[in-house]
Length: 69
Image 1 (tube, one colour):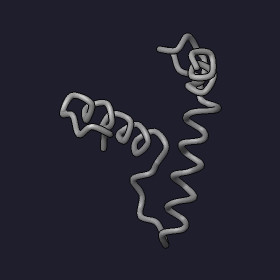
Image 2 (cartoon, one colour):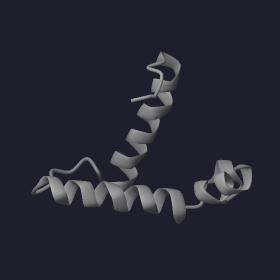
Image 3 (cartoon, helix red, strand yellow):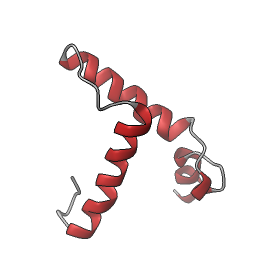
Image 4 (cartoon, one colour):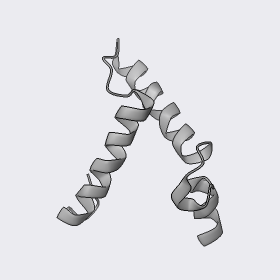
């Protein structure tokens, strides 16, 4: 799940997967692969571009990333 296969980074990846499954309902059974891919893409877009995050001072991850890049 992580780029360097580091065990401490895996916890963060698992946390994000849990959020996507629990809060955005990606734990459902999909009719086909294209439906699952479309749902995952839409969810990640919503999470990164629309959802405001308390830990980011009510900013989206994309806004914070653009300010640091």
